[in-house]
Amino acid sequence: HRALAANPKLWEVLDLHEMKKAGERLISALSLARYRHLKVVNLEFAQDIEDRHFLRLKETGAILLEELEFLNLNACQKISDTGIGAATSLCPNLRALSIYWIVGLTDASIEHVVKNCKQIIDLNMSGCKNISDRGIQLVADNYQGLQKLDITRCIKLTDDALQKVLEKCSALESLNMYALSSFTDKAYTKIGYLGNLTFLDLCGAQNLTDDGLSSISRCGSLTYLNLSWCVRVTDVGVVAIAQGCRSLELLSLFGILGVTDACLEALSKSCSNSLTTLDVNGCTGIKRRSRDELIQLFPRLSCFKVHS
Image 1: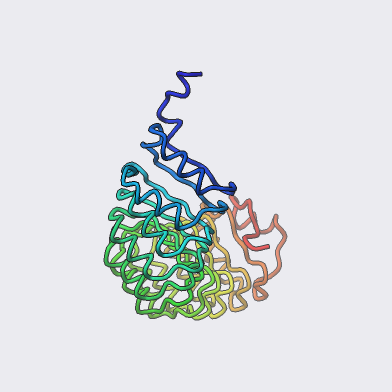
Image 2: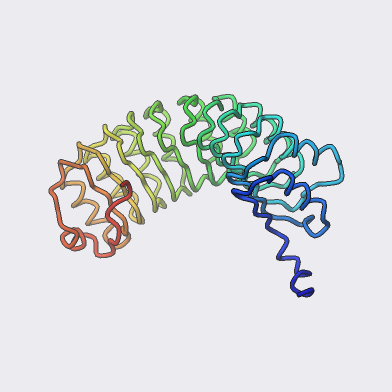
């Protein structure tokens, strides 16, 4: 038992997700020497975690989590910009930060992050509705090696700011823009310059047209593409995707009325060896087919629905 407890690998992850009194538990844990080599702290949906807990840790001056790589604060609603400043000051070598659905956060949080953590490659800001162009501009200016970005429901962002990110963060491999309807092709066309992109979620991109999608077809490494409810898209754009993105494993066209069997034929010619998930539910222009008929077109298909 002692030998097991002495194994440093056991103390690299501190998982307090969904726990009550998480703030006090965090402080207690970090007072123990064995937790000084933490790589992951998970506080997702934790209860009773507030700014004051991170401020206490910062004020002691004795705790610096230099090896921490991933901090998950998802849905910790009692944390404000002040708490983000204190938390990030403790982990200067952080690589991944997730602040999903902390709706009170503003651009001031991003200021703290870029000041305190210089090595971020994975940033999840999903649901942070008060982060604006200024915040995303800070991301673009400071994290040009960024690999993953989630801006789902960041509704204050505009084309101009998104363009800056896409131009400067050219190493992006994953881009989640779910439920953002205000962007236009002015920004979407820039996605085509992301040569390493494998994951792209554009669900609800109501202003995306075939021109924008044709530019995105230059992302030849794409394996995941969600175009659900991209209502202005037609066969022209999807055929371009079929011809340019031949490694697609998941494609959702859910709810797009402007596509027909022509795009299905193009996908079958180019992506039949890779597609395992294809959702054409609600595409009234595509002939209804049984699962067996779809499998004849796409032999590797195993999933027929992305959205329920």
